[in-house]
Length: 418
Image (cartoon, rainbow, N blue to C red; front, side, top):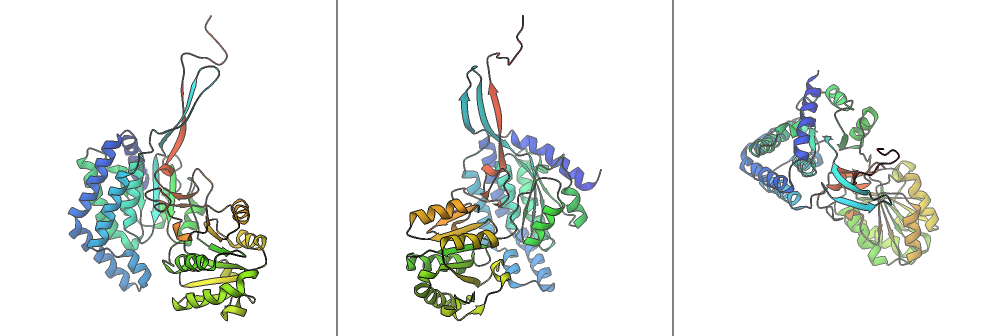
């Protein structure tokens, strides 16, 4: 038996103990984990400094360095996030549906933990704590495989969390950090079909595609967020400008940031010059089609631009002649993440909603609300554009599944005792 299989088996066994914890014990555990992080602040920040120094030596860019960096304020934020998860309603044991059949049996659908989850991620050390908290609150075990760039930070955070588990009398294998970062080890983990119940990759498109292409276990994924805002004929221009500003500029590196702006021809002459002025004032590069550039005077857009997730201050723009043309564009280039329509026409809004299969549809609201916390989930472990048991932002409930519990009074289907 390999080392990774041994670790995974121990995590699976520990998950069974976590599944039996009461809500009160799980909440107390998460509170203790949050405090452990604060108690170990000096050690965690020292470990993070090692990662930052190594990343700089490798020439890693400023955006990655920012995602990697921890300080006292950010660590306190991670601890607060654990406490927020503790305060969320527990989905385990929730009866989502109950009916009595004609023969008298009572059929319930009850939420239970998924089991053992493999979390594979890059760069962000906060994911170590966030994923652990969400998985444990939902009654699961979790095996964490972070990136090499955050290995010291992840190890220090995991050590604090595991100490809290032990002190609470919970097998600390329920939270297992893989320290062997060889690709071969990750590949083996993704083949453990009898042990791992679900894999969740979180990072760049390259990592997610690698996991999806090599896994034999179920994978929750979204490759990228090519999010569109369509400005309908007769839309409120000020509303459309506000949503464009927030969707593109507030955090351009997020997967829910806008990447393409579609504008109905009937409103293009009024809207696009104002949009261009607004975007250029914030340093946004515009790439437009021929019709859009009559008003934008921007870089000509290529076919690749409309399929791109820029994750930067860049946006592709196109003028369309109809709602149907906007829908056709999104179907061709979209990634099933998040789409926005700005309109005063409820019938057009309804058609937009019904015609697209994206995980989140916004009507006169910013794409940046496509987030578990903003949509009322409390916390988010990722977003799924895969139609498995969860679609869209994933919170605690998505880390459980429904099973049937049937209660009877001796009913049999066919045969009876003489």
